[in-house]
Image (cartoon, helix red, strand yellow):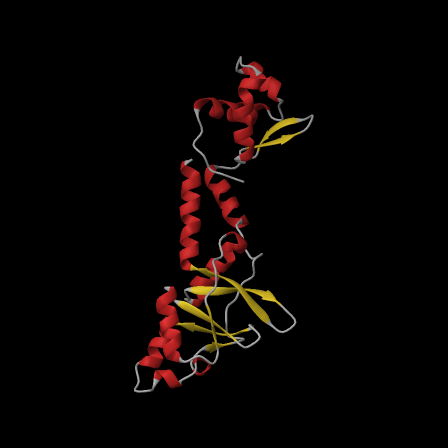
Length: 213
């Protein structure tokens, strides 16, 4: 895992030595600092795992040439949906708008994913959809959600292997709060998770926590 970290003075010296002399062995680095190889081993491991150095057997250490910001960017670009997705909240296409409003309130979510009898994604319900339906004088208990939902194929979806950065771009471009994480089946798209703006916030928190430690 690539982690941007705050380096101590010895680690900064090691980096400078590798920059100026790489490829260079651990023994040579230790000699230049008048330290034992065992003493340097933890520092070299940290610098390698953090992405500042690259190590090759029988050759030595190379400087990757990347700054802390570049390493952080590299890490962001590797994050996948499966690492941050949460449990989806689904509802049947034939339930009433009233029941959907109750589900959204009780589950404390901003988006419901609508499925058919075979548990296949057929639509999405947002707060705006339910609010729009409740503004008139219609009887909410008699209106099924499939009347007001956004239907396939006009639904933005993602898959577990997708990159978080790509999904974040979709959320911004489409101005939506959540997307369903789906799995392809013979019958259609099965909902296996959800990715929301809250999940994106968790990414930022985790990255900030990693940087501090």
